[in-house]
Image (cartoon, rainbow, N blue to C red; front, side, top):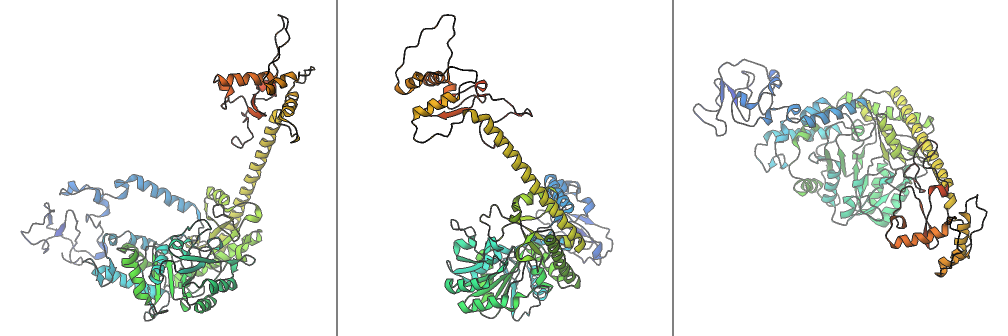
Length: 629
């Protein structure tokens, strides 16, 4: 094909279109699979920027909806349709998610809004190419441009973090942060080697070896022996003294710095000293703060660590990927470059996601700009403004503030948990996440919420807007507290009402020394109607326990026998033997059941003085439970 600078060339993999005079395909040459080739006798000169089209069809966007059959050829039409035509269901979901993002205050610390340029690269033809291996060492052909792209991405990664290529190397193929971490473990450790990372409830990450007394939660804890270090709960800061003592006893081979919910810098010199004392590698997982590190607004881990891993979509504001930085000189006798590259491929991954690497290259180029550094400074200042306002409103922050992009709010002093606050705020289009705080006993009911500033700073928020955001969050928490209070009062009222309704047939508290017979006599006596003045004969109770029936006195024919509760109990036993529903354990809903002594007493609502509904007309549950409240 001729270059675009001369004539417009747009080709389709299904129906190729080429210009007059093109040497592809050669004259008279037939290409299998493309029987309906079209030659354009008229070609217009153009600039490369004027050429727009779909890689598959070569048609400009305005013609994407034209079926292939209409332009010739027998190929599939699906490849020529846009998403809205090919799959409107998925398109609708994407549109709804887009609207949710636009209409919400996005405050999840691990999220951000990437650039249009990054999304264009991620949605490009790079997704079509397989490229197992490293640049220049591929297992597939046709990778000359992919090699060029990945090499460019590596150079930009080193430049973005101010690293000398002679001292540091980088692998840009990890699919995300957790795979990157596990690839480092695979490179440096043997199964059941020991590692230490920050405990999850204290701000660490699952991939750093989290486990519970009953379960090895993270895959890291399954393959390696993990011992956590923690925060000093009185200060909210890493307890480096305890870390040092534990490391000297546990003797880990790898110590991991980094966190997912820690609002302060790590003391890298102290951690380097501890690692050297026990002969361990020191690794930093800077996934959350990589953008801040690139802009030099937080401490630099590269000066002290042997390996640094990161995701690329958080504060770095790139695509969803991962990177592993490593020292080129051997550390503790290990060639980190060879070990890590082999762990990525062929160890744990196959072909890299080249479209992600393309988007990452775009992101890393922008990370070297003054605009990016100004953005990261705003991320930190906005977060501090948010933290200050929350403290003014009376909230307790873990560590008392923030040095980076997030704050961790402890809601336990208010008597609520993070899950309920998250739900209420989400209903108001304020998106943040529940999070464990130091001292939590259950990760399922965490006591705090985590709030981040990167995403809304990208949207243009300043300190003023983040102060207002803190007020919105406070209002949501107050609604959560009010909802809890109302629910509790309603449940208490319902419980008290239920007890009043059923106290008439509740077994009285009697001495444990009383015999079952005496207890039943007391129960029967209490069930007498107030209008009755005649004491129930005790011989009926004797009959129940002795099994002997006593002859009843004859009554006048005009007098109707009056059954008492004990007689009903006796009849209940008889009906039970006949299979009556009333005598079994499944009673009609309107008939409550109560176990007493040796039998199952059945009472009618009239006898017990129970109304079918409360004052509001709502049917009442006959049992003391919360199902109706």
